[in-house]
Amino acid sequence: MSQDFYEMLGCKRTASPEDIKKAYRKLAMEHHPDRNQGNKDAEKKFKELSHAYDILKDPDKRAAYDRYGAAAFESGHGPGGPGGMNGQGFDFGSVFGDIFDEMFNGGRGGGRPGARGDMRGQDLRFNLEITLEQAYGGTEATVRVPSSVSCETCHGSGAEAGSKPHQCPTCKGHGRLRAQQGFFTVERTCHTCQGAGQVIDKPCKSCAGQGRVRREKTLKVNIPAGVEDGTRIRLTGEGEAGTRGGPAGDLYVFLSVRRHQMFEREGADVHCRVPISMVQATLGGNIEVPTLDGKAARINIPAGAQAGHQFRLRAKGMPIVRSTQRGDMYIEINVETPTNLTAKQKELLKEFEKAGKTSPEADGFFSKVKEMFGGD
View 1: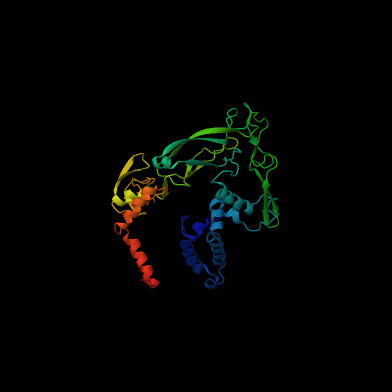
View 2 (view 1 turned 90 degrees about the vertical axis):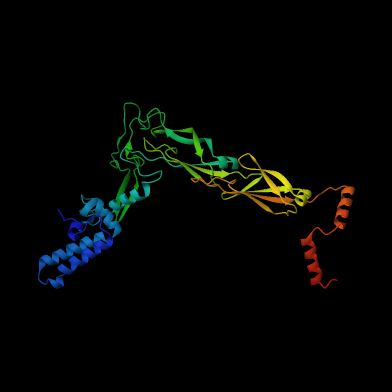
């Protein structure tokens, strides 16, 4: 039995790459052939240390060693030889195939079949539109999602009552077949079990051996107050059912907030444009404006208010998710110019204009225009 590479270098299995490098340098200096001329034992030790360091310094090789031991790197086992696919030795391509499977298929739906031939179900996406009021106060929505659910007849096994799946004789339960071609390992899905790793002699008639059937699910989705357009809510285990009893995928609900006819949202703040008459803007007064909580807020318009003037209502905006804070609400007044005036109304406005200057900004502007063009 070969010595453990970590023990050989005097390191723990949790050692960092830098610690492994330091340990190797120290031992390599001690057993270097130039320092031990004629010493066959030192030369052999130096080669063993170099081999161990060559494995442990490489992240991929180290991962393979940690899992499979020194057998992953036995020398003299070339393709087609004692250690190739046609012999009883170790298949290096197989090692890294398994590692990559765990890295890339161990997470989300559609991974490699498990020991029972099961496979995780696919994740699903559902787009849900809500109103700004619902986003403001939070709500519980009911959604109907077409999906695959576990077969009730066979309880997800895919086999008829009284029978059960058994290991595929072609791939020995792996779901895949490997063949060595030169230095490369070619892998393909097993044609007998279609990648499941198991075969069913008597498949369930309700699900045709899949362990799942198509059905529409009705689910409740809790939408917290303050969600924004594009918010994603994950419902664990509510995606597609796995095949043959495998774990279900997840359902991801993507929210879109419908455009409001009166309010406009910017982050946690809410903006609202409120039209007022020329008389209200001139004389001032109190007005009531709507808010998202359904209550009216009173605003005092100062005399002589101009179009575009904003009023800030603190904490009247959107809630902030996972926080007790709220945004603000901004009311912008829009002064309407009178239209469809009667003859009398026009006459009164002309008399009002003759009574004195009431628009200092406009008067100042046109005075500057006259000066620019040399007017009197």
